[in-house]
Image 1 (cartoon, one colour):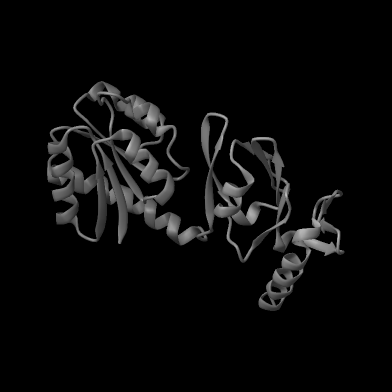
Image 2 (tube, helix red, strand yellow):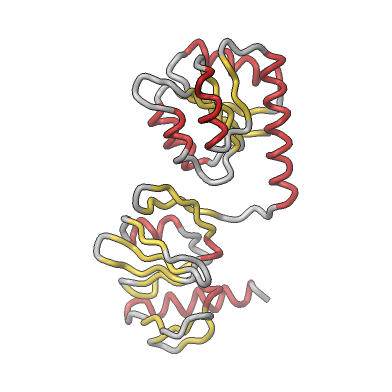
Length: 236
């Protein structure tokens, strides 16, 4: 089942996309007349294909497209043909000019499906989280993360051989995003990836690819030792 999202402030336009998706088959479609609600849904569910209007009352689809998660397959739907070049500049797979007729919709879907199927064939699906970094939304593969460090009202996400990310999120919120069988809070200021651990003692953790050590808080010592033991047993 292909997951799709359609955002358009015109309910009639959404009903047409909904009918065409039903005719095409094997599509789970979620529709939004609110651009804000639609974008929030996209950033948490990562659909395969997004249908996006361009000129809406409160938002511009070209601007919104720049905030889509990486590798989202985008199809613009709009009554204004002058936006076609702008659409392709933000890597839209196709541009449907309203009124949209089914044969043209079907061709757009065939192009989109080629891209979706190619991604599924050549990329391994990985667990990801979404973080706000400055004014951008960044999708992060959790198996790239070695450790997370608290910095006042921010966190620093460290990834070996990749740029460090600074995001305005609390440690508690960050901890809730990460897989609990893979990451553990070892200090009030640190979360570590169990797979990144090279060696450790009761008070220090040494990570692969890093010279520094991570301190283990006294209150976190037992939970860390128990989870790490289970993790290594399952990893054999």
